Image (cartoon, rainbow, N blue to C red; front, side, top):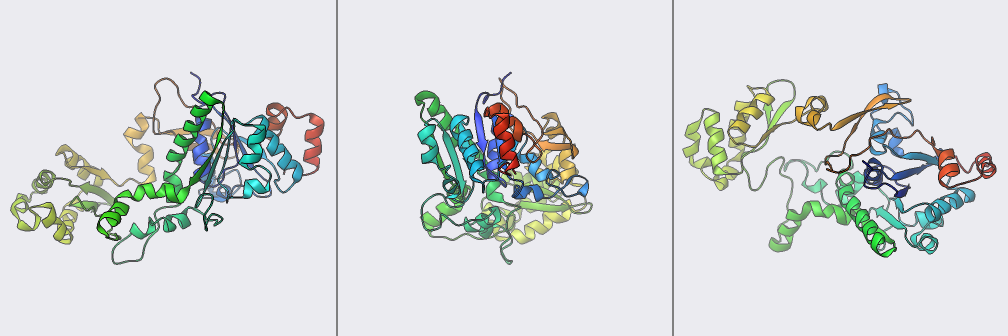
Length: 403
């Protein structure tokens, strides 16, 4: 079964997380994706933990390989005019999609802006993701995901009400935006199939990330209320939290969305008398007495293993789930059944695990392949895909344009 993107060529200038995560969908499903870096300035995520066997190296980052599987590695020294010419030839004579997530103006500085490329390749789809989008007073502001997480308001809502804000894990906005980005690129490719015309997709990561704060934004718009941090609590459920269980740092999340679920939990805990307790008789009452409620639930869970708590609750129709560690995830029977982790051989790292896609297509299957070494496929890309002569390739290499 051929991949759904078979025959699509992607020139991938993306780096860090949001861009490489987006383009990996295309390499997984059949597209030829050429990942452009430079030996003088490798992707910063190549220095991101964890490293295989705890030994650092540009080809040893588990973080990097997880987002770049199946791509071809090309190195170009974009400070060199000849390298910029090579990139232009790839963008205009080979690529269907050009993807980048630099600060706006970077590609234009290299002579690779959409207007220039589209003159020679009108069918090209260029995808540009940036912190704020193109245009506006802050368009040129650089930054990484944790900065954008703060600017977008996510950090304001994360943490406990009596403590300072806490950034969600890592570059949170980078992890949620690729799902929107992939849909936009597919839409542009679909239109190109009908019209032959490409387009420039300008994605503001700030604007995209606001989609994940819709309830809080609506609350302010309608009620003028500025939300804040509330730990693990939920405005429409109680109890709702992660409760301590037996063992070292073991927890189970429990969420009661209805009075019936709360009554079932009270009975399960052997405290059916709580059902008639006016402190907990309704959602409003439980929210007003949530500290006491959490203490009661926590006193019950702490005597039991997290898996037992989850099983007992789920058997009674109460939503519950173990707070799993990374070790737990690899042993999780549901993830194993769906082959969520693919084991791939790597020349420097040995066998490493990569996340598979969370969806399955009935007619095609993904092809999970290893991530490239830095510059591993430079000669193949230029000689075979671009059709460059050996003499020109050797000259470029000798002149350090391919560093």
